[in-house]
Image (cartoon, rainbow, N blue to C red; front, side):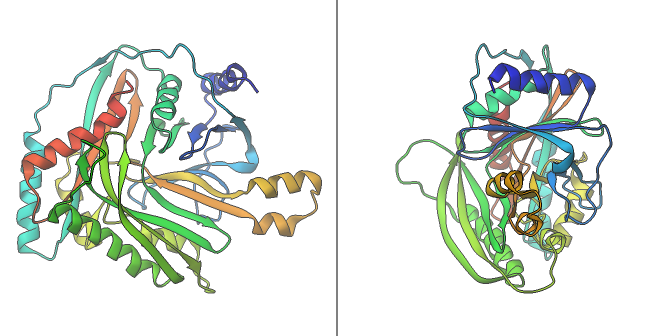
Length: 370
């Protein structure tokens, strides 16, 4: 399939308003697409569904998915992009004073309550002369090959795009892997990087939380790190966590509910952090800091096998995988407006001015391709 054929089918789906998703997984040389064959709205019930899921930050709200078995699956390898269209972006005029004040309030709350860390975020609104989500996705996948890039469209959610550096969960059979990604600084050189106490502590909150939660689900659990990980022009601390599912009756839904939202996007303790976020953030996060990706999808080997022997149902049932990423470094499109999202973890050691600079740096991942 040529690039022209591939993107012509995406444009047709867009015209007919069929749900679709374009995505490229980290360090893979291909782009895939799910184009839903019908116009129905499919909602996640218990995470036993199979397809591409798009879940909000707040798990009490609807999670959408594009069913694997009711979609046309396309793959372009390798993608070829030519004559990418530039977007004329007009900067918003908005003071960061409100975010500065929220951070200051959070620090005071942490020092006087059981709250240890809270992640505060902000939306940044920009006007555009041209709004072409397909062209934006092409730039994202070309600019950030080590990220999980995507362009999601659904009539109920509109357009969302992103380039996430953070894996939430990979599951194949009983093999599980995830990561703690927290702590941020601007990339300045490839020389030895030093991390201050604030970032080390912030990262430890996430790692300790995941290890505690996963101890009920995995045996054994292995960790490696923390390492310095580069995502665009930012550096993060990253710890890899892997293990083997215990022989229990725990469901994938229970595992995801236990893991998400992690302290990397919410805070700790979770209940206190959520209460502070809902009381103090001045907007609805919607799908920002939620998660997305392939859910219970047949592996490539299973899919090939099913073509050879359609009756081999048992093999198809076993050979499925899930690959989910946290919806960070993302944006939504509404008419001629781009809404970008950025956030940062606040601890008692945080500096409000530095936190405002950090979220400005984080939105540059998306802003630079507009």
